[in-house]
Length: 314
Image (tube, rainbow, N blue to C red; front, side, top):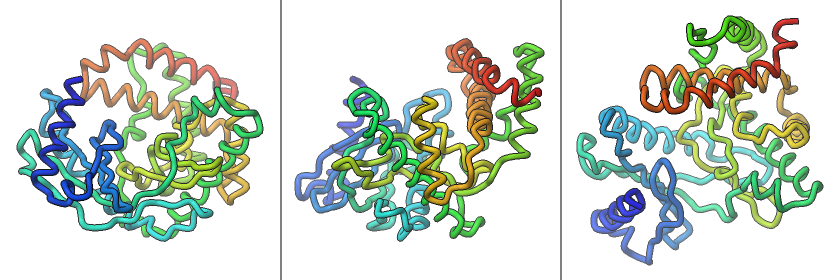
């Protein structure tokens, strides 16, 4: 409730500072980790990136907010005009706007873009409320879209790409807290990753909430504040439900639309990279979160390693 009130208060402040937010009855239509999504009722929306109230690391959060604003705007320009099989991406309407000094608690910034019609795709709802044929269609469409997005990435010069948080670089880091078998598998997973990884431009948050659909068709792809170059394109597969049947449909769509043949062991190894990298990142930068999540994330890591043990240690 406090977070909702804080965001509501910042929206009031937005309307005071920026007349465009007060004209035409602009409304908040969404909110999330990054801040607010505001509808201007003129075919455009704004993402308001808000300062994240973490008293332990305020400077890091302010820097992150500034970075996300810049990265989102830059990536919108990089993907403008991408051929995604009729699926739209937002177009940047104006340069990002910053409010307040970046060293103040209420610093925030705005990126304004065109609005795309559609409702966010919910993997859970699709799994629960659609027929097998409908589920197949949705997963294949999502795979096709991702393949086209990756293909567009090949047209972007490497020096123009953002490099997302490099947790992948420590994703296979061994630890005295792990068993000997876990460490052995992590070493083998690292070797497999570097041998089979195909680098490229990734979305980095290819979750259902960032995919719009309307009338059974995917209509839009959103949120590029994390997008950039990664050593493996398969990092984008991590947000897709890991149900084997549905992943089969996703991979079929991806490969049919021109995506590189998908190594299913590599998809699991990439997920292991993300889990282990997250553990390492938390231990170094968020020790309280690390203590809270150690057991669940460690169990998840062991389960995933067990699933590829035969492939890694033949």
